[in-house]
Length: 176
Image 1 (cartoon, rainbow, N blue to C red):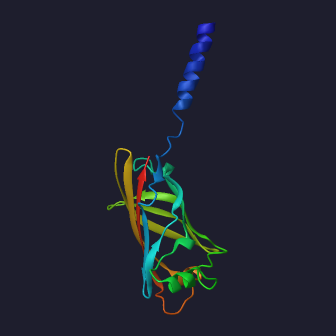
Image 2 (cartoon, rainbow, N blue to C red):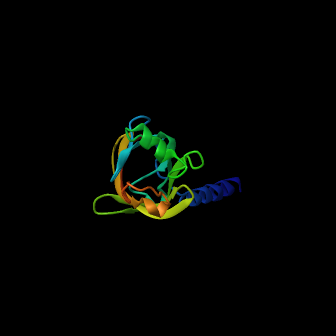
Image 3 (cartoon, helix red, strand yellow):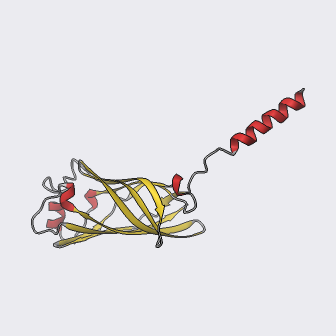
């Protein structure tokens, strides 16, 4: 009787483990190695303060996700006056909205890499965006690279003398 109970319990555990979700690999951003660059007519520069959760496995895209942000207070255009204006109340309003956030909802494989689709939040505005990216990894390290564009007026970033289209380049080295 004891042996029967043991085999039944073992069979249940084995069957249950077949339905356990395999999670994507959790990656940590290599501090001071990443770059978030932006370029538009009239302003270009970098932002730091990139942090968040990166779970990615090219062979398990349904379990992969990004929930990341960048600190608006780190904006650097190379011009102190432009930096203050960008952080000011009439543009990013960094005091009230200190982070730009992206949360993915879906990952897809493409012919040239991947696309992360999700919500981009700048100030109080949230928009659906798709970010094409590549991932090159070896062992416990890798690098995500992506390029995409947004229209700044979609996010209520109003400023004369600055182009409407903002090109964004991401280079995010990571480690396990």
